Image 1 (tube, rainbow, N blue to C red):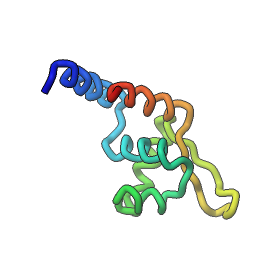
Image 2: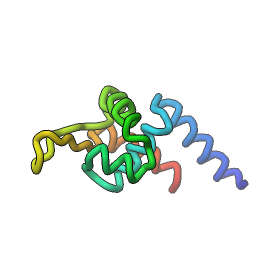
Image 3: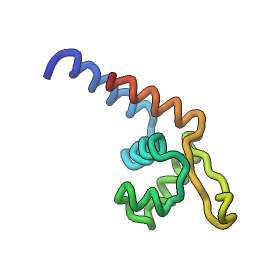
Image 4: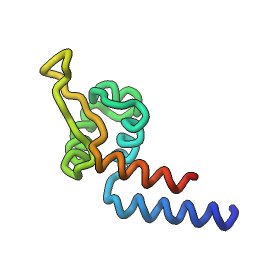
Length: 99
């Protein structure tokens, strides 16, 4: 592996560690950055995460301030999740390590 690649990977690992988020949380944030606002059922299916485990991950990400939730305009009982401003900043900062 080249020195620049090693440095990028090291910097990425440091940024991920500083975020304090789990691997599942980072996968969820990355998915939402691409997919946009969506339900937990759609996320669970797309990411292969057990639907019964997903609420725990989502609650932690909401608490961290990286995720926003809102009622669905089509169904007030349904909740949709999206990246918050801080979530966008985190995903963008992590993506910089791949340029």
